[in-house]
Image: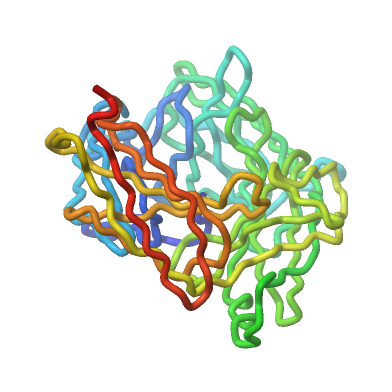
Length: 392
């Protein structure tokens, strides 16, 4: 998920950076601008110099990047990236205008993506920090030859519009005359609740949750569509400026957040929407319910190895997810220490599947899954036995 409007992905004047609030997982860290044809999201320094996209520790090929493993409550330090020479490339300029009136849109943030020439799908997304002037004009710098699409980026909760992607090609010179058309977006309104709440103080935690609604950006020909929201004292929330398509709603994962509170289900008129809410152009959708679960349960245990010795360097991936058939979208990764011990806290009550697997292209063992039950205020103890002899 991308965090707009904050500086958590920027370096300071010494080149020092710190990215916080990450969940347990394996990450690749990069800086700079992706060349045409890439995928994913590339966050550039807001208005700063642009460099060829470089992965830690200093390689431009993602396949050669060193992966960083982050466990719950841990910190990876000294992840220093050595960038290559700055390559400013060419510029692309144009205007952002209202699609209906043709009037210029001022102070709008503008970004761009690479475009796959074969299927017109948008690839690497570059958030430049460039804003339009009083005449709706913008100018993007440092673009390498390739196929692209420019678009307006909605930042902040007051935005009510989205844009069409405006395609342009860069070959051997600057590009001018790009026109980005902005349209009034759809709105989504509803209420947030805690499904298993018996503590009035827990309900107050909802007001500290930050929300984001977003359209699919992978394998899409549409410009990215995002809207931020918050939960009011009465539990209500509202998103605006959403583009047509499937819209997912998530609780923002940045920062510590309220302990034990998880968004587990999104409902529309009483029906679960696991794939997102279908949004049409300019629609006003009401009756959405965000269902949170509040948990104080704990899971403690260990991974035991039998029937052999693990290859040197083998690490575990331990995941906790709602059991099959559960409508809740609840899950997390759990850190396993060098002794094979693990603990996870603030888990909502329910039935879960706890799975241990090997972090490697050639797994050292078959995944092992146990079904467990978690209750608030209680500790569930579990032992996962990995039998290496079973693969022989």
